[in-house]
Image (cartoon, rainbow over all chains, first blue to last red; front, side):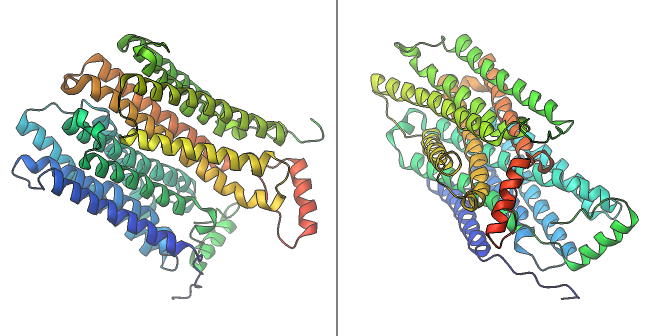
Length: 251
Length: 251
């Protein structure tokens, strides 16, 4: 373990993580089932191009983004740098898949001659995408690029975590708005007849909200934070001797 | 000050609180403007009864619930008990106003012969209402009713805060779904023509999301938590002498 002490994993944490993965995989599968059963499936070069959008967003901006937030809670004994790189790579994957989903819907609108960016879902979606990209760039500059000082990283860490959680919540909210929009455009007044598609999509909406809730619970529970490792404590102590402040700690 | 030391207020906190109030009041006013300008206003005994629902929810489940969460950050030098009572009373007001909003929509549906509880908005809304009521009851039993022990309160506090924030986020998400539903039912395909009602409602949606974000920022910023008062520290020390554990602290 390269001189690092092994920290114990809180007893309930693996169960919550397993539950979050079950919810996440189920919501991706259910998005696929919804598109396959009621929307004719998925293809790029046809009227089915629109359907690439919800599937990419469910995989990228919901499931992978959520998992990227959990990396520091799950990998408690790996080197901090390894965990950081995994965190950054999961976010890059999420952003790339989301970009494919974004291109799909704009391309579909262009081919059909539909207007862009008129709905609340699209406004929130663009906001999420821009914030997510900026957060990734700033996070990369501070935490992965070697230039930033230890004290700068410590001061930025709390903001990074808050904005990360906020962007994730906004992503879930935007997905719910998109789901509702897709349902109302197609079902209209039939929605109130408890059509199977409506009920399935409502359950999918609740799954989205539950996945968001469980990820946030794991992320915010104070005693589940990643404890600082011996290597970081040593760095922190070196830093302490150089300044007048306290050790900023680590999580 | 009854023997309690005055704690200083963080310099930026009042500005953030003022900004949250500006956002909250604007979103309530804009909900009223939307209903007045585009939906014929508000009345109980007419077709306008439905409009009581969004206004009550914006006031109760968004603005007042958000403000109830901020009470411990704003009133830093009042006695803990006074702050608790204010927190509980704001939540009771929010719940009562939300109940009026709930009755309005069910009564309107009954009179019109519309189906109830078929949409994702209604499923999320019922979930929010039940969770909010249960959270209030449990919170009252633990924190205001004199029976619960100090250690029981300390252990429950983190869950109370997490579920409080989660219910608030879910309330904002449910409001966004409801707004979208109301827009799509009335505007339909005209939504894509950038109708003034659609643009106003989109801006209202962004205001809702921003209010939620600012309240959560104030609530979760670690250095803005309410510091423990001398009276609580004394109680905590008494407790420490009776048990083997550390002082659980307070916030």
